[in-house]
Structure formats: structure tokens, C-alpha cells
Image 1 (cartoon, rainbow, N blue to C red):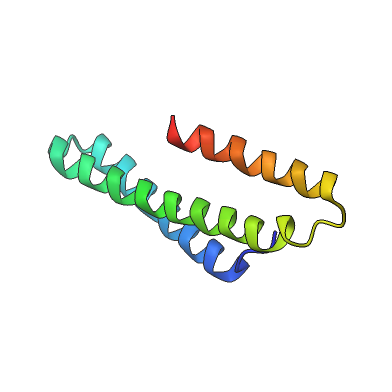
Image 2: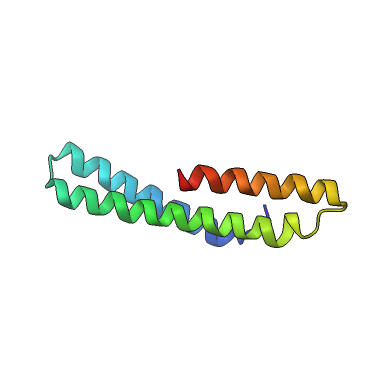
Length: 87
């Protein structure tokens, strides 16, 4: 992976901590809107991680592909990942 590993790990650990908090909120029957806001905040972090990983893929993996067929394969992988995000 060519993305900033330290930053990715920091963000994922933050999201994991938020998920633990959300689980506790559900167990405690907290207010629905409060839970929903935390779910959206966690989702935003995960989306940011994915965006950074995909950007690194474009900037490094695709750009540094040795030959045109390999480059085309990597672009196709990116497009398929993007399609899954946009569904």
C-alpha cells in the first residue's frame, strides 16, 4: 500500500474507537439521533481512509505500472472500486 500508513492507521483506530462508543450507546439505549450522528461521523472517517487509499493507488500503482496492459488493469480496478462506492 502506497498511502500514508501511519495516517491510515490513526484514522482507522479512531473509527474503531468510535464504533466501540456506538456499541455502548446502543447497549445503553441512548437517543437515536445521537447514535445516528456518531454512525455518520464514523462513516466519514472510513470514507476518508478509502479516498486516501484510492488516491495513492492512482498516484503510485497506476502511474508506475510497467506496461500499458498492466496500467489498464490497474485503472479497471480503480473504476470497479469507484463503482462500488457510488452505488
